[in-house]
Length: 317
Image (cartoon, rainbow, N blue to C red):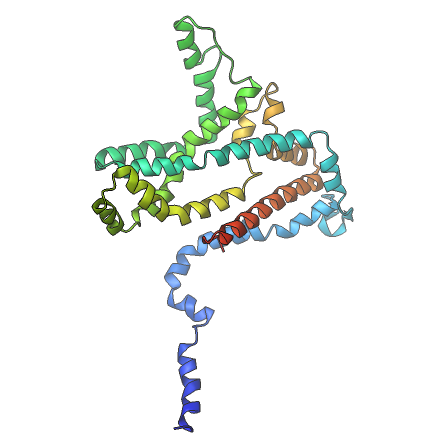
């Protein structure tokens, strides 16, 4: 017995050994094939350009290239922090980002309301109605905004004038810029953002609702005690990912909404990078701005993920 046991153990361990990566891919080749376009896109547009961030530490010249350009260390970062416009850029960017984060629960609320609709036809129509704006380009969204809110010819101001009121200026009012971009963003993407939460709600065990009903819970109590706790992991992951884009604003939307009157409130890092990097040819300086934004996003993701795990929830890793 003592002689045979050591001889059996290696064989048993070999049986329990995890399959190799290649064998794993071979076993699930069709699943990996489905993910191949996404992985290629990620590699081409996210990883291959990474060596290019070196120009943030160089006085980059398109004629000399990355290898021949002169190294200047942190000079561009120091220039950024000393830039008179840095505070304005940071204030505008962080304000718009915080407003987006404040509106983070909106798709969750919409998903909960859609889930409570029992009429399948009405639910399907409402879902289609709120999903469609996501496929409308920002050019169309901004054009519709001008059609509705223009002081001279806008539908809203025509109604106000018809009712005897004074026309109001919204498009060329800097203080109205923040609410306008947030409302546009919500109108365009709230329906699309609710899809993930509807999928999470669909995965809740129906037995939990039956148990809640037996305990006398009404619909609101079921939402509070069953639905919300069940989708909390999804909400946390989406929130952490949203924090990673804290200093990312929608360039296309912001740029199209900009005008000389509201530039004090609408100039953000994205538009600044475009104007300085593309128009003025300051590639190294704008690369430094990009690294600064990415660093802030990385710190927020790591910090929030750490706090979430300390609270006993699952993070993104």
